[in-house]
Image (tube, rainbow, N blue to C red):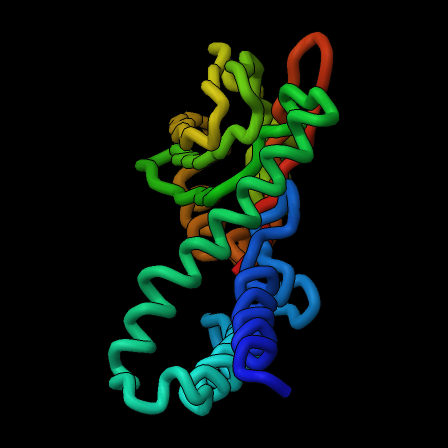
Length: 227
């Protein structure tokens, strides 16, 4: 096999790493996490899925080291070039492909997707404050205006007696892969202080929660998987 073909082969191996670590559409899990699920362990989480991209990355990197054109090149420089140049370009290619897909299909709200999401609890006495943070990317070519509904994790829903909460205001994203952060505090009353303490010590943080983004034309559901 020629050196050029070997180069393409090992660049393809590195591209597999980028694909495996890319997120599933409308889901907080990456592709590899969806295939190999994280494991809850003694109050923590074991992400064994991370070993697979790491092994593939090492295989691709070692392949580049063996190429004739890089025989006299410092291996540290190759690693830096891969991390700072090659992988970012590959990720840009994936994002550009997704942008093209949504634009060709004239998607509007369906072109909006999750970058990250988080829920935390605070409060005092007989109330609980649900702190919600949702980070989005818009792959469309224009702006999207929508409302947001948060579906609470099962345990939170049972304690608060409310399955979901509608955010009052409209939100806007601006396309062109711009990122937007939606933050909201939800104050809910509980029966008593003991109920608050029980909720804070429950396993609610180990449950999935969902966001529904919707307007008059479209709606999407975004899932944030439990750690």
